[in-house]
Image 1 (cartoon, rainbow, N blue to C red):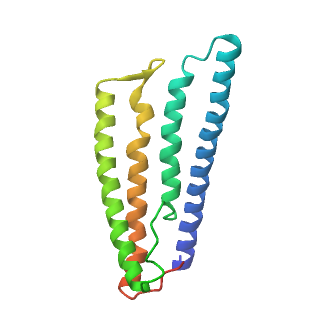
Image 2: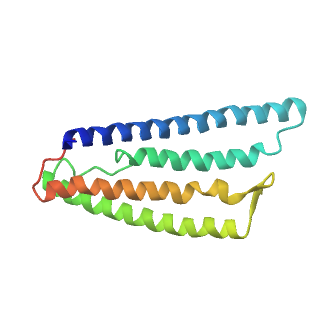
Image 3: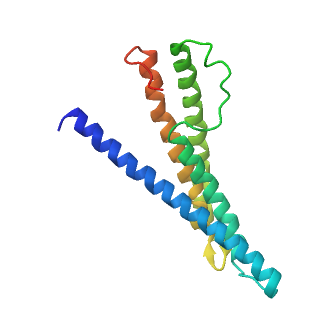
Length: 172
């Protein structure tokens, strides 16, 4: 297998991962969009509601927020302050990108680690979220999302490092 066919397979695999991420995100958001108005309708017109809907909506907000952050991290599309990037050289931009990417990866990894410890303690204590469902099942997204973000930013540092070391020009 040549290098180009290997990188083509990686690109196709990443495209599948991105499509799955987007599909899960759309599904969860769609569920929120259906569940919230249904709950309001049931309360206003029938003086009743779905008992698990409110806690489930809170869980869905957490999941959508974190999966949205994961999706934004795939192309380094998080909110940035981009005042100086037009004024500094390509190498200086690469240095700043490398430093901020490394910092983001480190902070995300620390959060993932401690979130993992939190989820493990929730599992050990068998905390219940609602309707008899253990809380750790809903909380597992926290270490997962921050772990993926850390990995993506760490891997993203390699493109900046390549520019810094003169191996290649940065693709914009």
